[in-house]
Amino acid sequence: MNHKVYISLIVGAVFSCLGLYLAFRNVPIASLLDYASQINYAFAIFPVILAGWMSCLILGFRWQTLTKRDPF
Figure 1 (cartoon, helix red, strand yellow):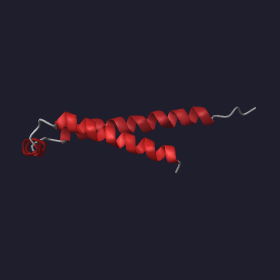
Figure 2 (tube, rainbow, N blue to C red):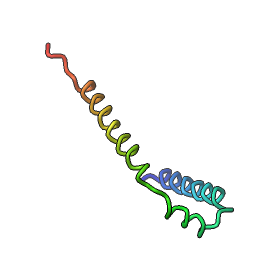
Figure 3 (spheres, rainbow, N blue to C red):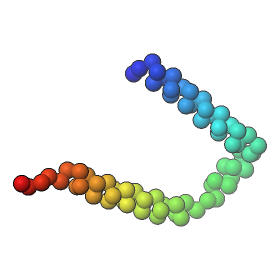
């Protein structure tokens, strides 16, 4: 890879870590993990599956349109 790509990845990782630190610096980790273990993830599964299915459907129509050739 290019030297600029490595620098970009490192800078992005540093900013991501800094953002996570600032977002969670006052949150007790034990309480966060306890709360996360009690979440019912079934409510999140349906919208994710629906969004993925709709994305595939839209991309399929897009590729059909892009690859459609004039028969004449």
